[in-house]
Amino acid sequence: MTLPIASFILAAAFATATLSGVFGMAGGLVLMGALALVLPVSAAFVTHGVLQLVANGWRAILHRRHVHWDIVGWYALASLVAGVLVSLVVAAPSKGLLFLLLGLVPLLTWLPQTWLRLDAARPAHALASGFLVTGLNLLAGVAGPLLDIFFVRTELTRHAIVATKAATQVFAHLAKIIVYGAPLLVGAGAGGAGMPPLWLFALAIPLSMIGTWCGGLILETMSDVNFKRWTRWIVTAVGGLYLIQAAQLLLA
Image 1 (cartoon, rainbow, N blue to C red):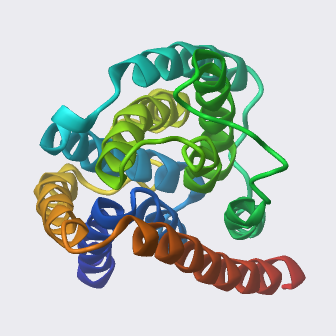
Image 2 (spheres, rainbow, N blue to C red):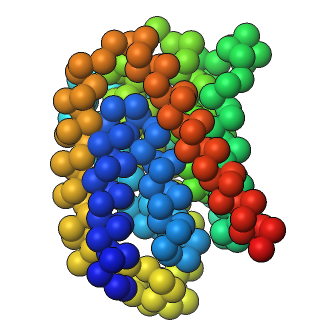
């Protein structure tokens, strides 16, 4: 791996962890696209899973007093089922298809709230979120906007939303690491198939943790209203860029 690519991945790990620390999901969407630009799709999925696992896990630890563990428990159960089912049929998409999916996922944030009366605080809805979000995560690499739909109608504060979503995403990203990482390890060894070297992960992981901490500081300065408004517009703008990239790749 060249130094410019390694530097790009490290910078992306820090910046997107900071973004996720503020908004709870936008960082993962940006990081997936950044990794797909410089890595093979399967390697990008695994790398994204590792970095986001750390970022989300650390964010959940930092805000652990705000985590609603009952939601996390139901989510984890459904996430396991989704991981097993998708692993039986999943195949890594082409880069063009991946960017298309990444561009379409943010459109979920614009669904009228009256269409889907979902609330992650309800056990049945938490189960549905675990199954659907993990499934989409395994197909498109990210599923933050879908997860957000289950939290829009909750009575949770912005701190509880960020903390609980972070805890749930630990399981979604763990599923991605297992589903896509196992074939890479079996077929090409730990350093094969375009995976970044271990020293890059050793640097990127603490950068993700620092970025998550910085994002938490920024979160303290925002109101709940601004928090929800900015989340929607950021992921929509990123999605638009991904659709342009997808068009270029598919038409080419």
